[in-house]
Image (tube, rainbow, N blue to C red):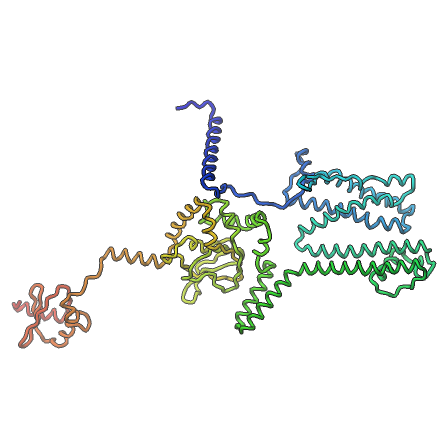
Length: 588
């Protein structure tokens, strides 16, 4: 035997040799069959996440906690929320600070503190976060890093006085707000709520700018110089905002402009108001229409189906069941057909969704254990969702089985008895039934359903068609062999009752043999059964004398004798007693 100097090294070398041989065999199979795939399952595709700075921090500082990709994405959106708040502070308060007299010796220290906090947020975003973001442009990976929007022009206020005009470069960070808006929509279940709120914000911001322009015009013409301008009473911003609302929305009731400047300003307000508000109202209509598009399609489909049933005088019971199916389907999944949504997605996305939803259930099915993992993934893409109402029969005994069912939600019952009132078993979410029919042959009736399966309440099922399975197995010959072997075992254990009864019948014939035929002479006289020849003899010749002689018996009366030979006959006790008495007298 070989001498082993190091058991660890020897085991490692053996493991390496084993893996190399397996790899060689795998490539040989792929060279023979170009459609064969690797046995490893494709990794699920997760949502795209930007290459954020925390990944770099993790590599530099091992103590920094690591997060899952989805958590990283949400943390990045949370940071974008802070950046968006800083941007909104600049874009809303900069025009007000430029126009209205709110910079006083008392308020300036507070404005400086808030400005510093907002600038710190912008510096952290530009210096630490943005360099870790990258995008593709023209096939090249580009990392954008702009420092223009954080240049501290506020320091010029030391020379020229404190003013908000030095903060106008902060408005260049508007892209951060749009990025926050897009990413927030991607994680919201009802994104139209944010769209409506954002459109309303655009409307309020337009009124905000118009209020600032009106105060500038009033200050240019002179405060309280005419009825049209601001009279200097009350809160300046609130009075100007009220004027902007009535002016842009064209409510009317405003003071008549007197000078040319006032007339031009008011006409510009009217034109801008008509254009801006019509655009915003149209955008609001599109947002609400897009939010209710699915429900509109559902209502149209349901109304069309009801009109069709009324046209052909469908019974009310059937119409009520159809309406129930429509309403439950919409409430359960928000659409009538899930496949329509998935068909618009690329194959990678459909595969990721199918793996996340159904792969764990599929992998537990005894019929598919040991098969190629990629084959199971291909089967997931062929599943179809269907909803059954309470009391609906999913399968009936004797029907031809062409599908396999996976319970997505709800319960089904295997029932039997004269009126299907006996419940044999209840199957819940994650269970599978009907898988035997996928492998049984129709030539001997083996693909017939052997039980009744009834929906117990509303139930949502995934259906796999036999035709789809056959198309998939063409590319997986090894899995086809595994399924054929397991199918034979399952059919032997769960075969049809008719086939089992026929097999028992054949076994009984082989053990006892066929029934012997009736003797020819007995058939001539009508047999030995009820109403036969012997029965007639019993009635007509009850007083006759019966003689036994070996295998013959002799019936004698008056002037004639009847002699019949048969080995397998049985006689009544009356005849046997008469024969015994005669034998005792010495007659044969």
